[in-house]
Image 1 (cartoon, rainbow, N blue to C red):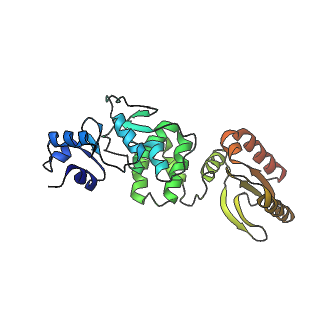
Image 2 (cartoon, one colour):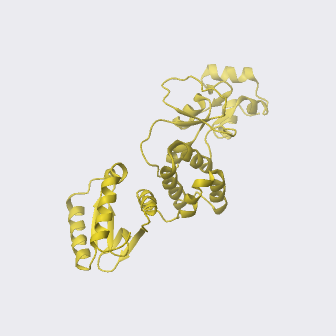
Image 3 (cartoon, one colour):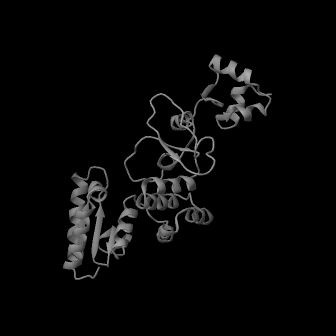
Length: 277
């Protein structure tokens, strides 16, 4: 029989006491190993050995499983901000456990929270319930682009959503390379405007987004966009104008936090170009 520490490590670094007892490890043996510092009791009946990611440890100490935006961000999925502490899945009627420095958001959703973290599919459904359609859509497209969603998993996510929003899965595409692409495309779709993404234009190069073959939208993202990059953008914009395109540039904050200004600019440009919305 392996020592408790090695057994827990073989089970992924986290294990329930009831599971460990199946390997012949008694409660007293676990208590002794905790006292000796060889293993850690995260909460009643759950033990771990380092290294376990701090968010997982905190979610278990809270009494549930990591889910929603916390799981998605941990796996590299683009999630609309802000990050607001850990999101923890608790079964309905379950009580969160008290633990030091708790800033967790408790999600009381149906199902049996696993030990550790929810699957990507479940985390996406929980994100819809927590943050709404736009955040879900952006994360869904990002997860699909990262190869995390098979055809069957996409259909399972769709089936788990309310009927009224299943069209979001139908609209989604797997080629969203930028996190800003998804909310832009969704918002313009609701206005009846189609957004073509990552388009290569002869004489200009690759444009982030193009509307009606005439209006180029560039999203500059979060980082600094000065110096040589700014000069390159001005050269591209001049080349685009020469070829009959109009270019609008917006930074991350404008798109995410001041959509009314972005929408007005796009609709105004389409009017000038005499393109019907």
